[in-house]
Image (cartoon, rainbow, N blue to C red; front, side, top):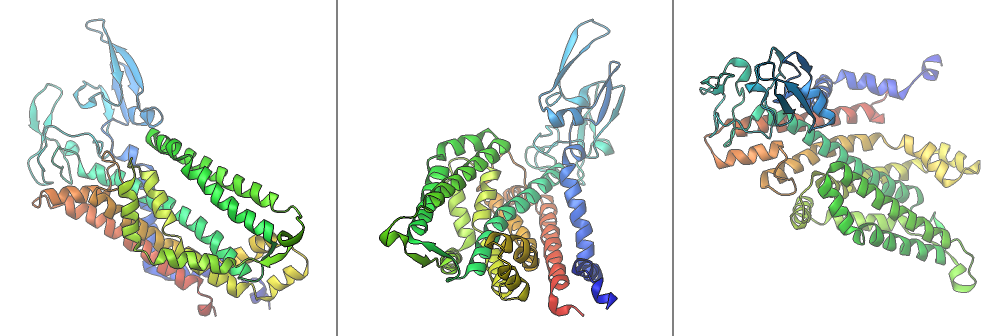
Amino acid sequence: MSENKDFSFKQYAWKQFKKNKAAMVSLYILVFLIFTALSAHFIANDQPLYAKYRGNSYYPAFQTYFNATLTDSTKNPLTGNWEQLQFDITDWKQLELERVIWAPIPYSPEKPDRYNREYVAPTDVQYYKNVKGEIVPAPKKFRHHLGTDAIGRDVAAGLIHGTKVSLLVGILSMGIAATIGIILGALAGFYGDKNLIATRFRYYMTILGVVLGFFYAFIARNTALAESFNDGMGSGILGLLISLVVFFVVVFICNSVGRLNLPGFMSKKVTVPVDSIVSRGIEILNSMPNLLLIITISAIMKERSLVILMVIIGITSWTGIARFTRAEFLKIRELEFLQAAKALGYSDKRTMLKHALPNGLAPVFVSIAFGIASAILVESGLSFLGIGVPDESVTWGSLLSLGRQEFEAWWLVMFPGIAIFITITVYNLIGEGLRDALDPKLKQ
């Protein structure tokens, strides 16, 4: 009795997951990739982590993390003149630094090395301009260990910063997809076609609210959204959040107006076919080739932005999560604990959020893990084709695309390809581990 009483499914699932060696190794690799993405600015940067110049101590990589165009001035003891230092454009390698600590990869992904252009291989002779202005063979710490591209950009730095882009696209796009899929799947599975009853007026007003909300949130604000995305990722996300708030406010207002009691035909109560509406939407979206749809939407956008790409991938990838959530809710809504919640008079909102949802998300986590891998693959494919991603953004797919311009530059194909392969495999193995650990049929 005590063993059953103390049983915790979370502990059991974690114990089962740990038994899967491949999944655990993949989890450690994923943690390393996340750490690499978060620390990319300090791992690959042409600005030193610490530098002492003319008696002053600087921390350029850390200081420019919060202010990219930070400037400072120092006095030349020989001439007495003041020298202006703008940290992001100063060539620190050409300064006579008294002490310096460089990043592990002392190059930024977007800045070319003029002395190692034209596809320098990792094993080729590489050159470096020292403080005296002499062009000499590059010392070990200033070598491009994974080679360069046509204009001398460091491949290793591109891979490090590309990790941040790929993980960000995968996680945020699937966050959008999971939000849409869980909400629609939960509504479809919980209510079905006959359990949600409303007056005709409220039903029609809600539909009108969705249409008007979409118009005012996204169509009417199309110019404002485009301008916010052009201003940067932060402004783009803020603009998107404002549009979502506008959408939900309009729907809420129309739904509230629909609560009015009108006489006659509009007051008659009808069942809302939530399941049929969501299922038909899933079928329509699944009938279109997903990748072709993403490519088409990305190609017609006026401005290319990573945020827009995340949103496009997210709003076209929610169907699988919605189907899993719907199937779980169809099963859960007939179980005793939900019937008891209804008998106790709990509202549908409380029953759905506090009782049904926590018990129906296990398969969704598996779908999200596989979905992140798919989103990273889609982003890499679009970057390879030069669609959706800005030219200045360095991604694994854009590095691969550079490789097709010069077939002999094998390092531009091999290293990004290995990075994509490892990341996709890691997420797939974690997804399989979660599926095995969360499968109640395996519970003993």
